[in-house]
Amino acid sequence: MNNMFTQIQAFYEKADIQITAWMAKYSLPALRFGLGLIFVWFGALKFVPGLSPAEGLVRNTIYFVNPDIFLPILALWEVAIGLGFWLGFLTKKFERITILLLFLQMPGTALPLLILPEVCWTSFPFGLTLEGQYIIKNLAIISSALVLGATVRGGSVPAEEPKR
Image 1 (cartoon, rainbow, N blue to C red):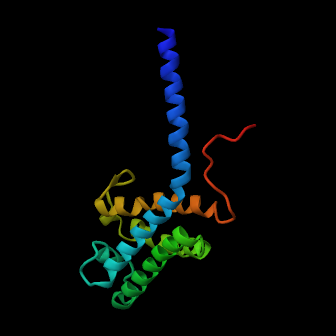
Image 2 (cartoon, one colour):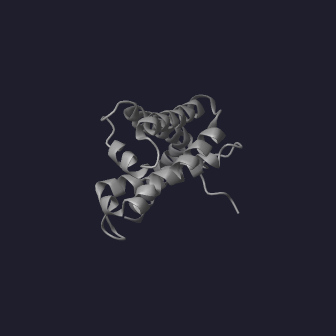
Image 3 (cartoon, rainbow, N blue to C red):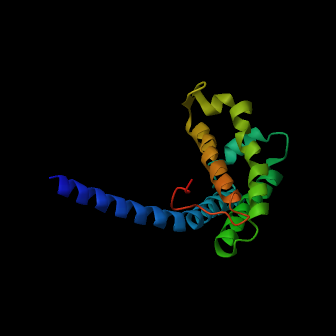
């Protein structure tokens, strides 16, 4: 019985090492591709009036700027971020400027939490509406950009814990 447990444990360890190595190899390209897709898609929707589910939120948040001018600029900005991540996926260039554009855009995406609390919260501070959830998910996008930013000087995701 002990021998069988040792074999299972050895199999698990070998599989864990292989899976971890695979994730280390493909995680950053997948992150670049996924972020690029999100930004190109969501940005492109904003080019067509009435197509983006976020259009009303943007119009009501940035009420001090003509939304007919602001929305195409925001759309272009988001598509540029997405293309920057895709170029990073393909060439590992433009990541610094792409991450900068993302971080300059993110405070604006959080504005509805302050300006339109009735649209974002069902019960402050935990009950979020769909719009509120849409905004809070940006924490994952910001975290993803931090991971990519940590690699612009050649860093990587190690498959193993560093030896001490």
